[in-house]
Length: 81
Image (tube, one colour):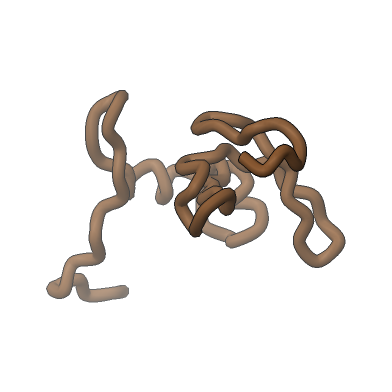
């Protein structure tokens, strides 16, 4: 830590500004994108609002247990409607 503010930890809620909009995001890995550059995650409702993907669809993509969740990989045999 270089002393530039408080230390960001996994699970911290941070505010990001992108194209004049403020977003709340959760820190996934404090150094995920490099030293002092956290990787973050957004909630399903935010993804629904800004990406247009319905929350039930996003929930269906999540696999795993309470402590270990990940997204399903797209299937090569998937045939769209």
